[in-house]
Image 1 (cartoon, helix red, strand yellow):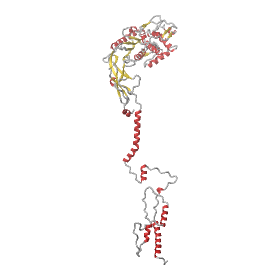
Image 2: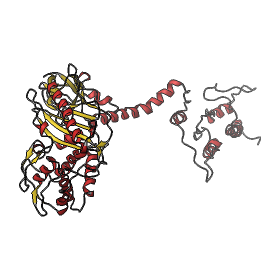
Image 3: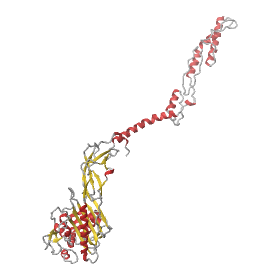
Length: 550
């Protein structure tokens, strides 16, 4: 060992120190010197310290990584140096890195954690903290979600409103054209007792008098008998109709002395329906009324027919009327003047009825003598009275249903009236004197109405009378195409009515197109004129369609 040269001794020393230095470097001890240090220092003898210089070249400095929120697994940087240090560095690089609790895999059966909100996930991935919540950010986030939904809903609403069917247009009268009142004053010469009613057909009621309570009608009830017969077995004007055979019951009843009847009948004799109506209405044959009732129902008595009479009364709105027999002889057959006026208007529409009741007398083939009308003095009074029926007995007193005409300008309206419960003072067998009284009182009313009837222009041509409402706020004015004249007595107030005639109103039309009629008065006989658009009718605008609520 003493023989070793200095060079060999130095070499062994250097190797030993290198081995020791590598072990220290791999253990993480700080190594002095390095590539940037000085070439070394000298020992006490002045010999350069080559051992430290060699160690500096064979080791590298370990720099710890900055920890982050998410674990990042990175292999250690290789360490330069000799074989010993390289082997240790490789072993360390291959060694497993311990997991923190955040990176440990979940135990089996543990539910997966809930996904993070978008902002939290972005902060996790980018290592950027979630921005603080502020009202502005909350509003912006909500707008991003709800604004598209709201716009879609608005678009759907617009489409629905535009494609919805348009409302049905309607006709409206103007506020100043709802009625018309005739100038002047008029009063009817009603009697002091009883009850009555009168009207101008097409114009309406002229008034009533007395308490409208049910009272016996006597033979005026035969008007309902004729109405039911003609309703179920209608006849044209001058048509004779089917043949009706006289039964033995009608022959026996014709021999009665206490009621009006047709005498001289024989069982098996045949008369036309038209002749039977003449015998019913002109001389007022009670036995003919019962015969027609049995014929119409094919029964042996009049019960079923009386039920039809009451049914017809209800259909006509005769609420205070009750029929118990087809002739009116029974005092329990009762009605009011107002109810009988409704019947008068209905029965006078039959073309086969009007000519019969206007006859003062008639010759019926098969009867031994002509039949005379109990109303002949009124029919021949020069007042254009054309019927209808008288009635009288002790229970009813005098009763009359009448019809008269008066031509005014180019029209001849029908005047209808009824008067019941007319009674004279003193004895009155079978109501004969009361019958005379009711005819005299009725004649005064007929004459007064005929004298007072006048005409007036209620609406002038071109006058705005109403409008068409399109249902969305649009109104197109309507004008009368002709003068509308009305006939009535002074002081009467007549209603104006507008109707489309059953045809649907258009959504658009040109000016001058006729779409309705304007009538004054009541009932189907009221005077009327066409009504047209004053200007073009246009469909509702886009804005009105869009904003409609109903």
